[in-house]
Image (cartoon, rainbow, N blue to C red; front, side, top):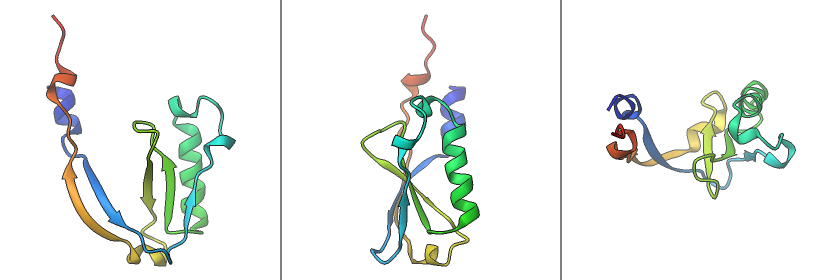
Length: 102
């Protein structure tokens, strides 16, 4: 159960980003083929994006659900205040994922 407790605070956040807010989408085609299993390429993208502060929102392909994107919001960018939280849902982790096999 330790794994469930460690991840118990995560939530899915549904947000609204107005069309006027410019977003940047990471082009994973420019990343090394194994970027999904390494954190350094993604970390470098995010670090550069935060440093440059060119947009309020960065879209990064989800590793867990590749058909979707994770949206990162830079709270230091003035347009970040235009985003709006619509709902927050508890992350639905099933305790059976962490059960010990006998």
